Image (tube, rainbow, N blue to C red; front, side, top):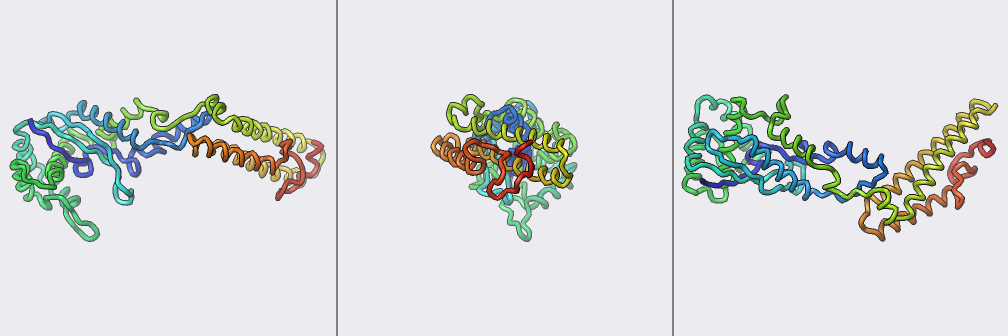
Length: 335
């Protein structure tokens, strides 16, 4: 048995992209995040890309063990060993580093398949599209034609790849993947049958086995109240103020006043209600953005409490007239 290494950047047999791919935060967690907040919990801004990567490494290894790709040419096992990311996501996405355990005759069997005439057209197109330099792209792959693969196999047999060992082995795997796709043994993750692909299986396993709370802090209401006791009363005042505005407006609109006055009142209430909603969001954000920096959270909350009092006064009368920068609510004081 021999062991080789490559990456999914070189041999794209599975995709773990968190920017362009299927594992971006919004796709994975937007529904969960909404549900947590609707239950009164705080979803903190400490999402761990590292923990996500560790989970993808484990799940991908399980997918490979179940799927057993390239078994026909002597691949005995594939392991994802690490997850990594580009410095910037302009031109690429995250990848997995992989280890392949292969039978002693793997290179012989793989070479026969790579040069099988059935795949020649597909392989030549793949190499031209992915491994050949052109304007704006300089390839670092060891083969720029199918004929060059003879030299790649020689280097692999003689352990003569130098710094290109991962590219040499990866080029073999990439072509084997194309052959398996042509034969219908493997499905590409862009095909219609996405969930039959290894990326689709990875996504299904990941979403079935993991939850948002594994990758970021989620504070329940009681825990947040103990840590930051001023937040809950502010949110309660905001909620009560919102209800009071709606009640006063409803009563006012039942009175015998001109329609123009009612419309003016509606616009004013809408403006105040939006301010209150934004305020409540800022209270929640103070915890979610800065926890566990307790001093920073408490300072942000104290500033917000001053903002509320400056807007509505110590008694918090959200229906009071003559608010700074606001229109009056004509007649609302008696509604």
